[in-house]
Amino acid sequence: MLPLAVVPQAPCGRRGSRLARGALVAKRILVLDDMKYLRDVQVLLLNEAGYAATALSSAREALDRLPELAPDLILLDVSMPGMDGRQFLARLRSTPQWQQLPVILTTGRVVDDVARENGCDVLSKPFSEIALLERVRKLIGDASSNGS
Image (cartoon, rainbow, N blue to C red):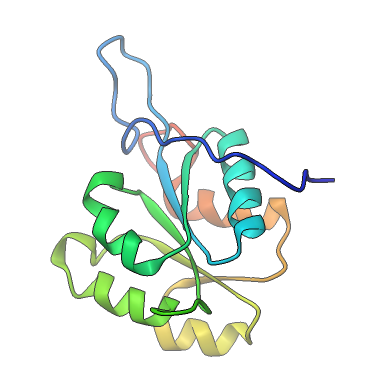
């Protein structure tokens, strides 16, 4: 059973690059969801799997911080107040730097509709730890590997 509260850790490293000592650095994942509990659980699971996960609750803040966070993947909630996941994705894809960035949409809606509309991988809520990690590994590989 998962704990009810988790303190997200700060991200470290970038895209499986090597540090001066030659150690691999964890791949970065941005978790974007308006529900704190879901953000915290996802960050916990991803950090335990060796990824460097950062969580944000606002799509606007995420757009502002993308260059700083430089994620290898985004887990994106479709239904959020203000700018929703679809609007965020449209803005993300309009920027050449982020057009190829892998995105996994998380949603409680019908999966086929969301996938067809957005051309992204979709993870239907509620999802298991295994489903989350399998989908992440499929798109970006293991936490510190150079390839997928």
